[in-house]
Length: 461
Image 1 (tube, rainbow, N blue to C red):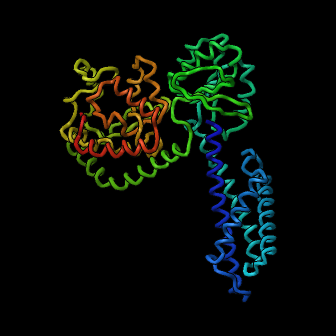
Image 2: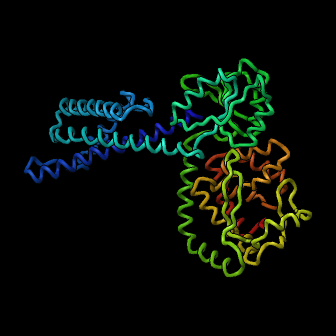
Image 3: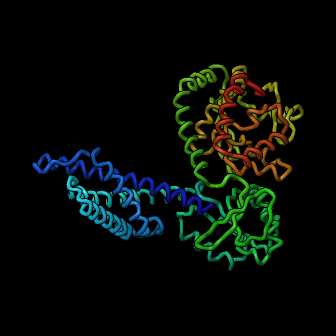
């Protein structure tokens, strides 16, 4: 997971740097043309006439940066050292381009433009590198953005890895607990995963406690939490093992959900972009709904409730209030007529729902504020529906918790398959089916099928 994440980040950086190289050449060309006009120098070609040169310069500059190890260095490298690396790379690029122009006898390209490009590109890439480093450090400085790590091994075995994680903040990892299987049980590890958000469990003592480690990894599999192991002798039924590495040390990563990929990155980007667009489009309608709620019943406009998100992280989900203001206090009075099996509470004709609330629920308009949760990254447009924290705690079968291994969403397979007409066990099975077969195409199909379901109000209470 860590290697794939670094690869994606590196690829994004390289794409941006290529664009910076092209922009630097364009700026150098523009400055040269402007100075040439002011000082009466020889006329320079139009930039569109030098597109071929821009492509060559971008390719040579990109490979020069790679050859100088620009994308393999530590994020902790000093700004001065970074600038020297960039300056050397661009200097080599300029010399190669000038040599090519000389060998090919290309005289219409002004050499001053190439030298100016070398200066501008060095500064541009160096400044952007500093901004990128600041963004990375800022993003991992917030606790909610760090990956919670549990180390399984003795204090001596964990010592080196703890220091490496501390020395590399760019990894975005935080050791939240350590378990020693020599003195603690696998059940304590499983309970720890249930009690707090855990993203990764790293086993540093696989060869010492083979039987215990296998049981522990199976516990992680049930919870949908990634397990990293420095061995290859554990067989699982669901979690898919892939090779990974940490500071050159090979590991086997067992993950029972979608792995880090360009498709998953696109899903996250599309969530933010589409939610922002939909919030703008639905803003007038949301204002009308808010006004209607205020005029028809006392209480707040928005209903806020703590729900379980990715890995069990608690967030506040927003909905338009569709019930009376004291609905939560009255739920215990209605427990006897709950129509949903399992820990979930749902009844078709809930007396706490207001007349306007029934319309909002039937048309799913009460869920529009969740677009704010999507924009904040707490929800996805498509994913297992988030359940209240108290309902998650009532899960009887551990396998049901694996639905927390993927970010929850506004719609899902359960939504388009009948919603409240489906039993709890089947609902959970559909969530796991979505996780195991996830793809962008599946998300698109669910979104398209959600539209007629919402319009018809199928299964809505």
